Image (cartoon, rainbow, N blue to C red; front, side):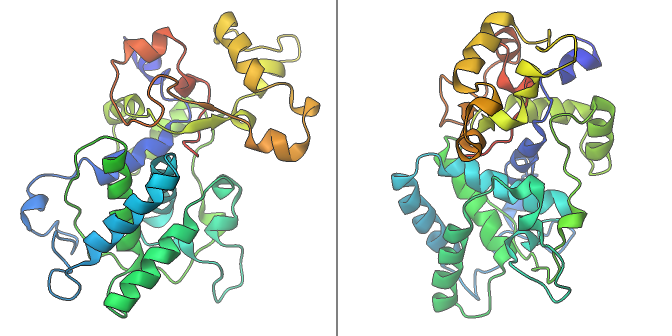
Length: 292
């Protein structure tokens, strides 16, 4: 399978970088050793020893009422990390500069989970005032999301510092129409190889693709070719049932329409063989935003 074939399953699945950040942590770090950037497992072992349990308990309780929560938390963490590092800048409502903040950016439009992070922060502050950063709370919450989606709980190095700046103009996250070479360059500048991109895309098995991210490929792909020929006709017909032409719905309803990325196990972060999603026209090759 050449590079373009391999990348065929990666269109717009860049948000799975969060899986790389939260799961693929070198096991040498998990033994309590420093990562080399000041982070280490057990960072709050003395100053706030119960912080990870507090996060786990609150996320677990919220998950009981919202089974789609893991995808939302994973996505919000990835958005935070993809801009200028995992610094909780995505959580800021306003800054001293009065510029639009990251959460107001177009790419952040479908994010949710802010209220849960606020709830966790309030509880942690009661236990350990002015001790635990929001950036670490977000990382711990993402770890719990991965665990609740079916993967083993892993140890997360901590010691991140919160940013006081947040600008929507700093968001450069690729979108579903970004050319492959630009996506490759985007991840390369962040230390992610092509092979790692493919692996991460294969792990993209929770979340949804909102219709607005890909319906142009069903109805307005080209002037003389309304439907993208790369999408199997029967699959396109299936998608159109959930995603009719945008002008047939009111704007609010059209904005919320979405299709599950993995209709078989939509709530489980599993790892099906790569040929399977390719064979069944995985939504990863149509356009996804991993949002719930």
